[in-house]
Image 1 (cartoon, rainbow, N blue to C red):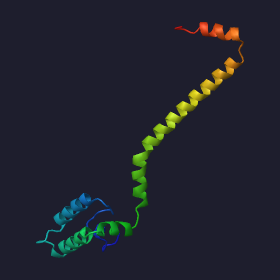
Image 2: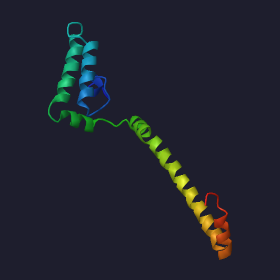
Image 3: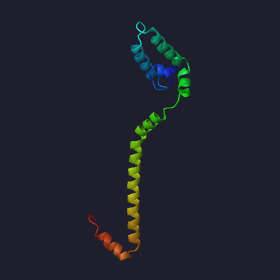
Length: 125
């Protein structure tokens, strides 16, 4: 971000969030009150007006450079827990499938009378 970038003037990362823009504007006004810092106030006001014109916020956002590290961090925060959970669930399913396959393999080698005897020995039956 350059000093002439309206987002930089307001101390805000490029965003499409109008409420974040307004919060940054009021925070910048607190840093540059019109009666104490007229030039700073004019820069802040010009940046805010430049971003609040119809379509200007989207245009400024699209023309601003991407902060790839920040975007990657946000994606990690958003998706890492879900990916870990899905991975654990997939491992559990795979373990069950292996167990079932082993059971089927063992049963396929048994004679019918052995199967009946094994089922009769199952607790709770």
